[in-house]
Amino acid sequence: MKKILLFSCSLFCTVCLSISAHAQVVCFVLNPQPIRGNYDIGIPASGWGISLDTVVATGRLVIGRSAGGTAAGDSLACDTTLINASAIAGKIAVLYRGSCEFGVKALAAQRAGAIGLIIINHSPGILNMAGGGVGAQVTIPLVLIGNAEGALIRPYIDGDSTVALIGQKRGAFRNDIGFSTGDLIRPMDMAVPRTQIQAVGDYIMKLGAIVRNYGIDTQNAITMNLQIEHTNLAGVTNPVYNQTATFPTLVPGDSFIVRLNDYDPLNTPMPITAGRGLYSLRYSVQSNSADDFDADNLNVQGFHITDTLYSKVRLDAQMNPVTSGGVRPTDATSGPYEYGVFYYSKVGGETRIDKIKFAFVTNVGFNLINETVVAKVSRWDDGNGNEMIDAGEVFDIGEGFYTYTDSLGSGSIKTADITDIASQTNGVVLDTGVYILSTVYTGPQTGVFTSIGTGLDYSASSPEYNQYTSPVYVSAWNANGFGADYVPVIVAVTSEAPGVSVRDQGLDVHDLKVYPNPVGDRLWMNAMVRQGINQLSWEVMDAAGKVMTRSDASGIMDGRWNGSLSTAELPAGIYILRMDAGSSSQFRKFVVVH
Image (cartoon, rainbow, N blue to C red; front, side, top):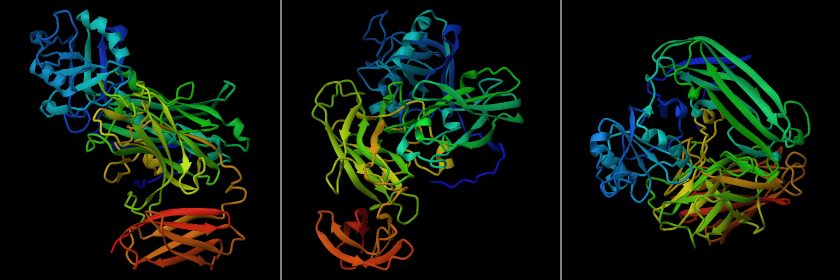
């Protein structure tokens, strides 16, 4: 987590920076007017194709027709040859997804002389495309759009009048000011349970945006505005925030970071019931010139305070996660791999995670029948403070299992009940700290992917909050995951932790830290202990649960205990420290190396 310089502003502040290397990748239909606009896209996964950040293709759209099809039929281009190559040469080809690899389709369009390719999905939503065996040979830009969008533009393509731009749009228009979704500073979550927001200061929204000049001309008299509306559970909407920032000029290739005042949804002492509901964040920007590309001048984001749900992906009106395609690590052609989201618990002891909702998607010809997915709740303790997930720093505290029994697994939301690993009771209570909520695919199939959300990108927000978004694990943890714009469909169903309240009475022991980790000959420990507790005990277990050593400890001073234990005689391996005080227990994993 990178630290950033924070600015003190009475209303807002701006910082100018170069964006010569920044591009916004789009699929924008220029004409005809009825379908003019920007379309959501999937792009090639890393490792194949040309980078869309560096190229742009503008041209008429032409449906490709494969040699195996008919003159009037749509093409899947699975036989690598397009019979209408003369019509496609110098144009942007349009093909349909299905039956063969994306790389095969792209290579067929490229060989026919296409300057770019749009693939229409056979199902709703988008995904990032894998290249397959021939993807490395592809050198033209390509994107994927949803089937509904494809159905919208198809009649106009047949009418021989549709022109589109795909790739980066920097320098494509004279007047073009705007921002991408990843430029917006927004809450780091899409939904947070009320148990985590109980008083003023529990949850602060940091706000602002990076405003960019993508165009050829200098932009003047620029205005950026943010309005927030709150819709309560009864459906009543009220404005709660409105701020505007202005700055005089922005030259081509530059941008401003505009930071607005923070917003606290409980900015006056009031019951949490008054703060629940949807907060709609409406970002807009304009200059004194008519914008030639106005698709990125307005962006509406959301944030929910709920009774039970925690989510980093968008939720629909029924509070179900919005899904869009899937991803998996490039170094995992099949399972096992683990993908999750970070949960930064600020109010310890109040929230219990009872269930995890998730989704996986499959390619055509694959299904998940009899496949078992593991849902996990883990704690991350950065023992050495290097802001990387090192061996022994992630400790599993809760798990659940779901086995698919139907053929409707792809894209459907499933639920796993979570069990506390230590106590074998339902649900797991979170202390103050950093947690990973994840799902593990362990099967052998190559056509299975973790479903991801759409319409959210935490790129600008993550450094502001000093938080990670979604980690991925194959052979080791990568805290950055696939990037801030890829967030897995993982939603926690929570409840109020019964009989436990850090705010009211405190856990008997909490905030346990161990270091260094990995450790050689001596492990140091410290923990916070509730007032009135004057003794605690601890034990060390190996990975199989065998107790290796145990001890009682006193010497608690001002609510904190410090101690150490010798690990010189422990064989190299993974161990679990259990700390008990009063009615509370804390667990930490550590690794011994010699």
